[in-house]
Image (tube, rainbow, N blue to C red; front, side, top):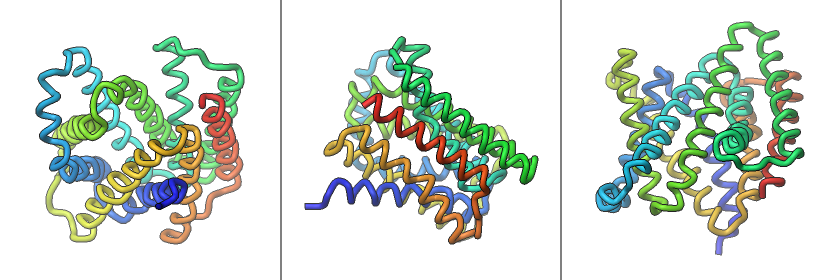
Length: 285
């Protein structure tokens, strides 16, 4: 029997490849985002479309609104984070987007009245200091990269909205049905954004198309699918701690594929961010 830790480690590896495939695609970020989530929803549809059709009429109106909000937030997450990779380093982008759990804590505290311990609040403060350090390092190296840092943080905020909004949905809908519906909404949202921004969805090179396919299969279906499998066998804090390996894995892959070497500020800020995330995940477990 395969160890759940081995499954989780493989999930982290798969997800770490996401930023690499985005860079290799060499296509507009909105098109990359659309194909990543759209193809993933398409591949999932044989297992989920039937149950989604049966579940939709029974879903209350308020729950449908929450589902739509969750899907739109996921679309904006991919749009902002994938765009950030065009403006800043892989290490900085992945580190900053992984602050999403901290924003989720803040949103749950603000809007759902969930209590946050002083330790968790301190962890959030430390992580914000780390994020500022990363952004400062990027700014000192090239002022234009500040936009990339801001977009990565926007990706973290929208991912946190997706997680907080979808928390109740995961308990009322079968997991596959929930994932398919949210991914479908996200794909439709990104398709609309592509149309509004006049971003073409055709005419891309075979390499770009291969990267679109790889993004759907490896980090999205493969990586996050294995994370969901791991959650059945391991506590959520343990899974969350393992996921902190993504910035490390993505940074190593960024060096191997593109020769990117994280700066001193990025490394120092990244250590603060990951330490703070570890504290928050453990305290909330």
